[in-house]
Image (tube, rainbow, N blue to C red):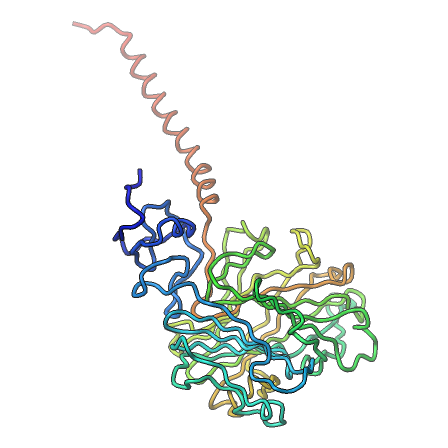
Length: 442
């Protein structure tokens, strides 16, 4: 029985528990609680992982204990005064908390990319020198005001798409790669949804000799989050208010070989003092992504590895349908993390922020994410491929067993134990009854 309390009276509670149901906050808005607790409610694991940037956003509490749910805004080409040009795509997503703000700057000027900047000021702002950004030397064209408020900066650039097929088990035939910096992109402004916090970058190659993209396109779908939760669509990624989702979609493009498979090259940029590391985690729980037990995280860590600064995280699966089910899963593999063969930043916005000091001011790493099974026929059949990844600040979210799974496991393990105890008790009772039938000898 939970203690009764008045909604208008602040209640102090234990500092190490965690809330399960945020909807109760609206019933009791004046609760005085710690960022990791919720008073007198059924306990379970909250999907939100607190960080120094944003403690748990699902609580409505006093300002000195927990910030409010961050305010999310999306702005297309901020400060741009020129005519509307589809090739000039910059989408600024800003999440403002009580004491900090997060900036995600998506762009298709050059290779499609996202610049991530965390600041310690809720009033920090993105500034762009457009004439310099669109010039051949964009270094210094993008910055955050005030400059001293920046806590961490990183970037993710999607540089190339490789296609290959295998004539047999040992020989692979590679086709000319698609350089994503040489794509023509539609205006992202047409797809921005300020309510759902979504947008989409869609493009085709500038040069397509084989007409592979005559009926197809390549897209990056962006979703921003204002609170913690889990995606309803596969692969059911767990997300926090410190993260956003990007979905890579290849749709309708004609494969250039029988059983073609695709590889997406992803480049990460880290500022001085940080290093990228690839982590692989296995779990016995596949509740949200059936048959998939592996999660990979590309984490930017401090040099001594003591803290996670930002991350790119994904499940080891892709899908071959617009409305995916378990049967539409496509194998997804990650190559080893390596130093980028070409340290030049192919994204104008990323280069504009970090400058041209590769090796000194920043480091560039690359990883290949491949899609397709042994036969490579998954894309051939439906000509559709989607892969989702989460990116954000702080440590990547970690899946845990849901109350349902815990209940099922407890029942599965507890029932045999209960039967064993009942059986032992029955045997003891039977033995005592048998010995009691004999008369005692004087």
